[in-house]
Structures are given as structure tokens and as C-alpha cells.
Picture (cartoon, rainbow, N blue to C red):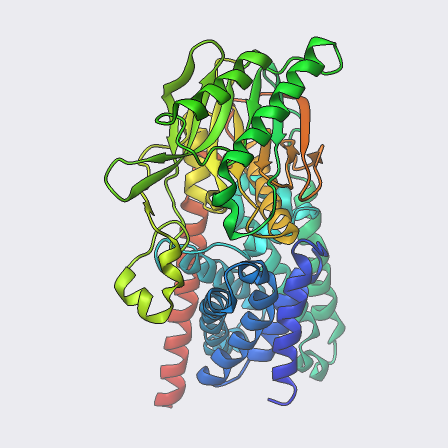
Length: 507
């Protein structure tokens, strides 16, 4: 354990380095390899402990943005919870050791499916899961990102972990006892190089193949960062209105092209514009000035007492809110937008009472028809959930739109989120954009390239012409099945290990 424990910590730090803001994507398979080597042939409890060390080394710094304005407790609890899933992975890696020792060439594939199985569980439990830190989201600049067009985030995660498994199998010391030890080492090493090369062979389009549409992102900024964002709601709304009116002036003198659509971020109007006539009038002023529909991120009161909705609503020039084109966030964040088991949670921390009103989830995908384009609207963390994004595309979305508010976090969180948008654009072959209150905002091409990315904690307006697309990638068509198949193989690997262990014990 004197060597294994440092290896486990190094694994977590290598994985951390693969994610934004560092973005050193080759470190992800290295981290996978280090964890696989550390847990191999360990007892179940030792494997779990080593996996937990890796999880803490990864998630504590990766999620450090959660403690900027809420104190240490939410950050510590969330990091430990996520580390617990890597503890399960470490235990699984230790448990399958007899299987991969007997079938050495299976080690890379088993490593890959175990990672997919772990992420499938973590993405769904508890309270709907928390997919932050999936291996796939670390591959924004990697050739492996292109595999998302074939099998979404699960296939990218599998490819990263498979590469790591090839590395550990190639370097594992027992090969040295063979006369021709260099044959398996060379073969496995070549495989580790070949997996990313395969990614380069996946065809992805640089631009959409449909009609052109001009889109503006308005990043109005906030007076100050932090949890008192809600106390600044009139100022935030005014910032977005004023920036849009300035854009209209630039359009009028020919400095900027006239947009077909303007996108405001999540929480750009925390004053319910459907009930507050002054807020509604201000938004109408902006939409009328620019002469284009504005997708507004709004907090709407109701439907019941003590309930609110996090929504995107199209506000049309001349006519105001189009209630037929309204999306309510389907996956509100537990303990941030609603509090499960509030009485029990209050016993842990009274900070949960900062969430005064529970956000009610919507039931329909965010498919909104602006006239110029059919939008696939998802709000903030929803971009991390496979099915939430896919449902908009299968519902007819031609352009993916992520409305988000990063004012309570930092630039690292914003860049991690933008990496998710990149994967979604490739996965579904769609142009995409992220609109944030404070940054980072920007456009993403269907091949994952980012354009016009804004700075953080600044006011900015970016305008770009995009080509829409309404085709379907293989990943869009097959949906959940790659993850189901890979997770089933993980279960099969564990079952195979059970059989071998029983035979050994019986002998």
C-alpha cells in the first residue's frame, strides 16, 4: 500500500488535469491506468479505499467552485459523495483481478466498461445524479471527442478508459517474465495509440447543412458575483435590456448584422415578467428595439404557493411573451433549486433554508420554435444529462441552446460547462451555444470548435451566423443503448469474477 496509495492520489490529480481549466486531455487515460494499477490484486476493502483516494483528489479541487459563496459544507459533502462512486469503482477493479489475470487481454475492455458502469450509476443517483466529472467531458480537444457522434458521452468515456486499460496492461510487470515480453507490450502500446486515431476517422461536419440564421448572445453581467445575485435582479434585468438596446443601435448603423434571434441567459429576469408589468415592459422594449425574438431566462412564480419555475420563454417583438414557446427546466438541482427531505437536511445545515421556494420541474423537452430556427433549450446543469439534451433533438431542435447563470461560481465551472456543450454539439451534429450571465458564453460548431468565447465577469454581446441542421447522428438514433450495452458488460465482468473466485475458493 505504500506505493498504491500515492498512485491512487496521482490518478486523481492526473484526471483533474484533463478537465478545464487545465484541459490536458491525455492525462485522463493516464489517470485511469494509475487507478487500475493501484487497485489490481488488492482486497476489496483496499480497492475501495484506493478508489476513494482517487475520488477525493479529483473531485475536491474539480468542484471547489461550489464553496465560493456557500461555505465549505456543500463542497465537502458533494466531493465525498462523488468520491464514493470511485470507491465502488476501485472495489470493482480489485474484485475483477482474477478475471483479468486469467484473460490478460481483457483488462483494457474490462477497465472501460467498469468506468461506464460507474458513471451510469453516478449520473442517476441520488436525486437524479450529478454527472460532473465524466471522463467524456475532459476530451474537448481530443480526437476521442468525435466518437460522441457514434455513441455519445458513454462511448467517449469507454474509449478514454479503454486507452488507460491498454496502458496499464502494457506496462504491468508480469509481462517481463516472458521470453518474448516485448510482443504483448508493443501490441498493447500500439492499441493505446490507435484508439485516439480511430476517433479521427469518425466523420463530423464543421458546419450545419441547413439554412443560415444569425444569432446574438447577450451576456449582461451582474453588479457583483455571489449568492446575493437574486438581490440584484432588477439591475441584472436592466443590464440585459440595455445591452440588447445597444446592439439594436449598432444594427441600425450597420456595425452589426440584424439577428434573427437573441439569447439571454438563465436568470436574466429573476423578476417574473409574466406577472410584473414593469419587467415585461422592459423586455418588450429590448425585443422591439432589436426587431427579433428574445429567448429570456426567467424565474416564474407558481404554479402553487411557495413554488417557482426556472424557464426559458420566447419574447417576440410587437407581441411580447409567446406562452406556446415556453420551456420549464426539467431537472432542477437538489439542494440548490429545491430541497429534498427539507426537515432532515436542515438538521445537517440550516443553509438549506436559503432555498426559500422549491423549483418545480417541467415535463416537456425544451423544443421552442423561434420562427427562424427550432431551438433545443436546456438550462444550466441540464447539459450534463444525456437524455435531457437528446429529447430536444429528437423533438426537432436544429440549434442547441444552453442558458446558464455562472454568477455564483467561477470561470473554472463555466469552462467545464462549455466542455459539455462541445460534446453535445458533436454528439447530435448540431450547432450550439452557451449564454451565461457573466461568462463564459460562446458558439460551438457541430465538430466541437468554439467561436467568439467571451471573458468571465464581463459584459459582452456576440453575434454569429450559424448553419442549422436537422439530420440525426448515429448517437442520436441509438440513444441510451450504447450505455446500456457497456454497463451490461460491466455486470458480466463482475459476474465472471464471481465464478472464478468461487472456483478458486472451492479448489
